[in-house]
Length: 434
Image 1 (cartoon, rainbow, N blue to C red):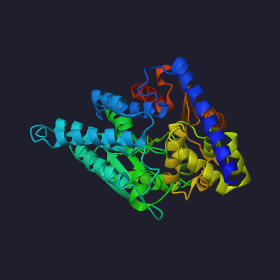
Image 2 (cartoon, helix red, strand yellow):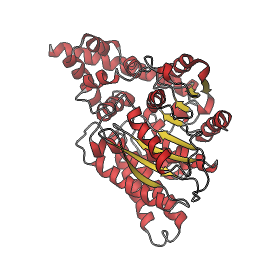
Image 3 (cartoon, rainbow, N blue to C red):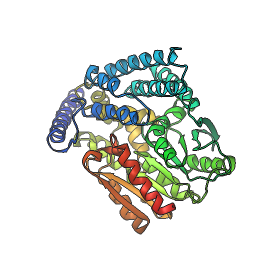
Image 4 (cartoon, rainbow, N blue to C red):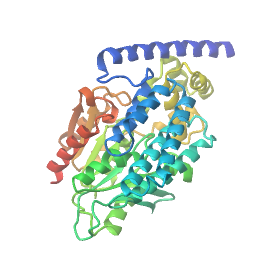
């Protein structure tokens, strides 16, 4: 039996490597609109994240490019070490009294420090007992809070009571004034991203347009997963409804309840759709992108040799296959990281349990309950949920506006093109809500 499993694993790995090589070659020749930052496609994409955040004060350009130069492609430990070193170098600058005399220096340097600590954490979740998972997050949280306190209008970290858990949130008012009701956007991330990243992606552009913003995290997302030990839940209205309650109660003087949209980013496209279906006080919903069926998307990445034991319910064989692939450094990074991150975020017992839990994350049964205007973003090079945004938009009919990003903005969630992303979505919000 062991020899059979070994043979299957070898066959599976060969298939994955062949597919990965073909996809990488195709992207290099035909689809990648920019210079590659790493020969590893996953590392390339994740290096784009801090570069994207740089335009809103979340990083500096050359330090990230230096990290790209120094990281060993596909090596998770190398990634963590390089960004940990960069984070500590930047932290030392933030603590230098000759720099910290100035609020702008404090803000920018601590925001960059926080970003680099978050990057250092990204590929670590294969070992949930790794102490760096909590250590890096404590460092990023402390750094981000120091930066947030130095903003012209300081942000506020919140704990909002929910149903048997606490929602972690960040409140970013657009002004110190308490006599103007402003449009207010509710922002949620997805499978792996932190709410702190959303500050640089969406809050800064929202403030420039006079909007308030609140970010949040629920079960399975970074701070709630760490501090409360909770994995993802499919009934996401349990997370968003307390946030809406907070806005309409605690911030009623500055929040316009008729202009209170909800945005879901990446896997957050599922979360936002689910919340919108059961929380009618939301004015509009933005899905970037649309997630029709998470299990289908994750299942389709698996070669047939792995699908077979999953379909037959052979948990032992499936776990052996996935565990061997995860441990093999030649397995494509997206598959190794995706499985490890999923097991951690869902707080699954193993890979088979993770795939069973994912089955609950599909929208078909309740999507008709979404009655508010809905913006559905798609990307021509979408790699995580291909073809699913269109299916979501079609199911919503005339309630949906479908937008396909192409060219330099064709990456998943428009990473690297945040200016265009915010131009398009705020244009739509202006048409829908004024």
